[in-house]
Each structure stands twice: as C-alpha cells, then as structure tokens.
Image (cartoon, rainbow, N blue to C red; front, side, top):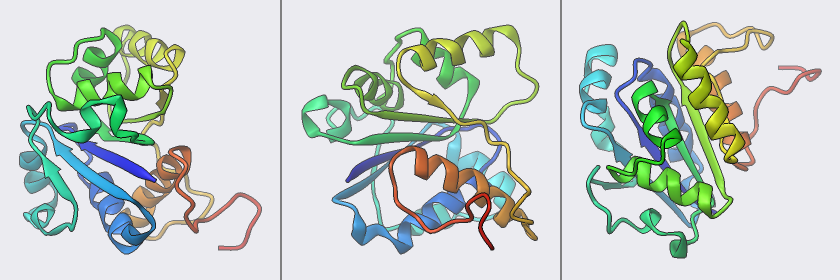
Length: 186
C-alpha cells in the first residue's frame, strides 16, 4: 500500500503526531509513506506541542510546491491521501478544484483516480460554506472524517482521545490496524 499524509496548519497538531507515531511503528507494512506539510503546519505543531519532533519521522517529505512528487500523478498508483488535520482553506480549494500546491493537487489526483481521500477536518463550528465544501468533496468520492474523538473506549490521555480519530481515519484509508472496536473489550 502506498499512502501520502498531508498536514495543514489547522489547529490539532496532536492528530498528525499520533498518526505519524503509529505509522512509524508499522511502516514496514507499506510500500511507501510520503509526507507533505502546508506552509504553516510546522509552526502550528511547534506552538501546540512545543517541539520540533516532526523532523524525526522516517518518511520522505516533499515540499508543498513539489509537483514532481510521485503522488502528484495518478500513474504513481498511490492508494490513499490522508489530510490530517485538514484546514477549511484546504478543504475549500479541493472542493473548488483549485490545485495550487501539492496537497490540493494530490487530493485532485486521488479523487480522479477514485482512490481514498480522507479529510480529517478540524474546525468548529462549521459555517454553511464549510458544510457545502464537505458535501462537494463527499459527492466527488472523498471522505470527511471530523476530528471528533469518541469516548466509548474510555481514553485516559489526550493522545488516547486523538488516537480514536486517527485510528478511524487510517481504517477509512484501508489500513489494517489493531484498535478498539465497538462491542469489544479494550
């Protein structure tokens, strides 16, 4: 499986941190895991998490304007793009068909190839424009996965709460992971 992870500057840096930590452990199960960061995603990470550990992950990182990245073309055969967190600006550009950077181009590619586009949106409340953009992306074949933790697994830390969202997003992308399932024991 080949997946790309896009990280935008929306609040919620805990989500990509938990996702990248989890993917680092199971990276050998993938043919490729690639990363792309929006212009201010690392700034938000530093602000919210207080460190630069994003530099330590074992994945290839592509620049936000690198249209030669493999997942900028359908011929590269990527299976999924997870945008985590997905800002409303990024969501709006995808919904409008504006491919002005690698993140929006990759989303366009995954949609046209009928592959998995998972947008982990992080905003509250939603306005009507946000909702319409989510509808447009859903109708085009993408999946909106709000960064809304579940609590039936009784998470004890903020990381465990974030993991409920990350695990769901990874499952939606087709990643087989061990996680809490409704009706099962923790």
